[in-house]
Image (cartoon, rainbow, N blue to C red):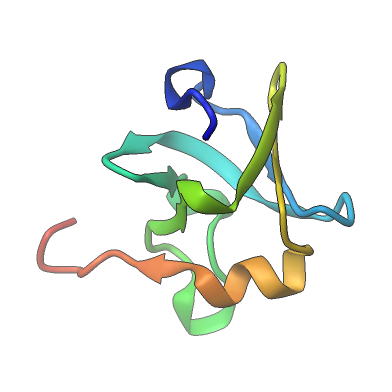
Amino acid sequence: MIDSTTIKEHAEVIGADGVHVGTVDHVEGNRIKLTKKDSGEGAHRGHHHFIPLSLVAEIEGDKVRLSANADVAITFEEEEDSKQA
């Protein structure tokens, strides 16, 4: 298990394939909350999305590398309920 306290705000989240997934807003519970401006596509744009910490393979300075390729990792994203935002 990774030490989530080493995940830095504004770190880049990348898939195992090196493809950009998003930018860290902060860690919330057992999930990484991605920034609104760099989270989601199309109708999902402009909302916070979350990536489970269980997908984090390693933390390399200002990069959070996931254990799944980017196209797979985004299927695990959870969208924040707009009523809570």
